[in-house]
Each structure stands twice: as structure tokens, then as C-alpha cells.
Length: 340
Image 1 (cartoon, rainbow, N blue to C red):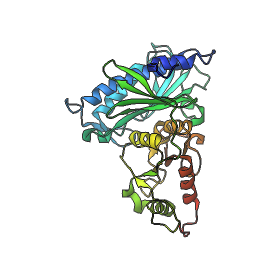
Image 2 (cartoon, rainbow, N blue to C red):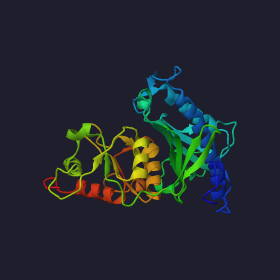
Image 3 (cartoon, rainbow, N blue to C red):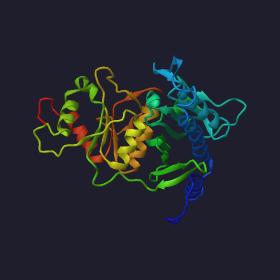
Image 4 (cartoon, rainbow, N blue to C red):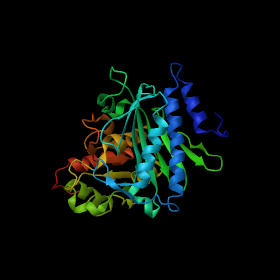
């Protein structure tokens, strides 16, 4: 493809599919349907302040969190965009407790869709960027329809993953294991256009760290010591980092992807297993990060190597520039009495 060409996401997906003669087109269809769902969600996000769609619907999701109206809309849009295509054997969502089956009157396929319909939705009413996160796995069970076994696969088994960022512009960023590509929605023609080809974390990176320091007193000593050192308060001669934190995972990671640095959501006294969801948030973002030359860890091991044991499993998360994530692991594993 010539650098000067205008490349839509549909064209890009077809170009990628042609590299694999054995491809059936099913994965391409899933990605195309997800792009359509993203356009529908973006349309509602853009007018959220103009209609009665902000606020809570009066019930909690499986995480015990109040469900926002736009959360519920995004969930329904993705489900209805994907349930009839014949490419999926089942779905799972952060908003639903269990497996989401494909209706009996629709055909099934060989893939599983795992998604967080609207990450960061608590920020909707203050106009902060939010996002949709998704990952796709191949079916591994022997039956026709999907099972829990198909959903509880480690991130290394993912065939594609990514996110949609709804902000000042809407971007879809994804990887199918051969690099990371970003597409920006042109609302005048209703198309996602290739705007960021083969994204790589910058080298040298900008020295940013992103973490919610309100939990500082609840962190382990290693985490406290690391953040103090990043701020230039330690004994080691370290060039201080700059703090950047939005409070929306997709937005914080997107900045880290384009600028470099490290995003952290460590375990704390309130969340000893971590806060973010392994399947719906950490794993797909980790795939994008690794494919862009970075690293994602739970503080001890690569996120993509973790074998999930339940649908709503939580995990600590450190991701971004590889050397910074390596440094975070070193701090967390040090003797708490050692200076930084």
C-alpha cells in the first residue's frame, strides 16, 4: 500500500487477510462488525450531553458497580452487531456475569469475543475520554457452541485485540499479532481511516508515569518507594519522571503508547488481587503494548502468560516502555528496607 493512499479499515483488514491464503474471512468479518459497533457507540457518546442518556440505570453489574446508561447502550450495540454473523460461538462481557450465548436461531462460528463495552464510563458526565476494549480467541472446545473453556484462555492465545478511544477524535487501535495499527474516524464520511501505521512505543521514550497516587498509603512499600524515586525523591541519581493520570484506562494507555512511559494500577489494601479485569481490560491492552515493542506485567510475570481461572478475575497491571516495566518489577521484588 502506498504511503499516500487513503486506506479505510475495511481495506486494511482485507489487505491483511490476503497475506494468509488459508484465511476464511471470519476474523475479518468480526473486526469489520466491531468497527461498525464503534461508530454507533461514538454517535451516542458525542451527543451524550444533549439527550437523557447520562447517569445510572439503577442497577449494579457483576462487579458491584453502578451501571451507566451509556454502558448498557454500548453492551446492547456490540451484542446485536455480533450475534447473527455466524463467526462467533459465544461472547463474554465485563457487564455480564456469565457466558453470553449465540441465539439458537443464528449460526455459530469458531471464535470467541471478549469485551468491555465502555471502559471508564464513570467519566462520561465530565467529558473525559472513554473507550471500548475487545479481544478475540479461537474456539478450543469440541462442541458446536462455546463453553467457559473457550473464554478462559491466556492472552498468548489471542488472535486479535485492541480498543476504541472516544475522545476529541475517535480512534480504533488493534493488533492481530503482526504489529499495531490505528484508525481515526472521519465523521464526514463515516469511515475509519488508517492514521497510525505500525505503531511503536517511542525510543527514547518520554519519562511519564501514570498512577492514582490517592492510594499511596495503601500500596506495598516497594510500590511507594518506586513512585518516590520516579519523583526524584530517592537516593539513586534518577532523572525525575513527569506525572500524567486521566483515570480512564484506554486514554491513559493510548497516551503511553504514543509518548512512552509507564502506566500502573498496582494492588493495594482495598484490592489485594488488583482492580483491573484480566480478560476484559488487561490482556487485550497487553497484546497491543507488546506488539508495539513494550511490555505488560502484573508485577511478577507477563500479563499474556497468566491463565485465567474465572471470567471476572482481577489483576495488578504495569505496562508501557519495556525498561520501565522491568524497573517496576525490580522495585516490587526488592527488600522493603533497601533505599531506591
